[in-house]
Amino acid sequence: AQSVTQLGSHVSVSEGALVLLRCNYSSSVPPYLFWYVQYPNQGLQLLLKYTTGATLVKGINGFEAEFKKSETSFHLTKPSAHMSDAAEYFCAVYNAGNMLTFGGGTRLMVKP
Amino acid sequence: ETGVTQSPTHLIKTRGQQVTLRCSSQSGHNTVSWYQQALGQGPQFIFQYYREEENGRGNFPPRFSGLQFPNYSSELNVNALELDDSALYLCASSLGLAGGRTDTQYFGPGTRLTVL
Image 1 (tube, chains in turn orange, yellow):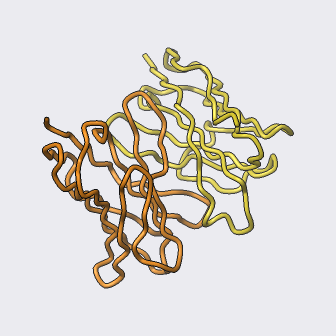
Image 2 (cartoon, helix red, strand yellow; image 1 turned 90 degrees about the vertical axis):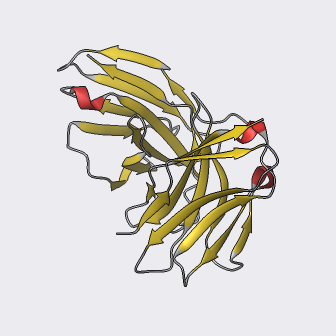
């Protein structure tokens, strides 16, 4: 079964700084990968997804992620953090049986 | 367009009781998935329903069961509640395109279940 590992349960950045959230996957087949964001007391919102084609994927709110097969990575980045980006971020991979398998999450804190 | 809604928002039960959680899909979606999110963890897949049939199941015991109705709304039932069942239960709907792998799952706000 495919799985994802998120490195760093907590990441803190200053407002305006680069955001980098790390996700590595384990998959025996070409993976379908997703990043979701969860704000406090809310459900998950899709930021972006990689299925096939272009390896650099652009999402909502200025986020993007690059699929790197050689590194088995799908890291999420944003050039300039905003206070409103503070949330929990989840990387996920599609698995047989129509399930999404999520990583443990990374809590992003943005300092003024 | 109405998004995914879930009810109730919060629920408190005691060990051994049974609970039913409800989910209304986004308009036009025929697939519903349920996830359990324990505190501080990522969501874990419970099962999925496609056109009223179970279409995939995660590693959860049979006391977790579900239904999908003709209008594609859904219920999650949990019998013989245990303390470890305390979690946020998330429902997600999707279009149910062929293959399903590229479907985007749209999540509701969740139901917070506390088992005492």
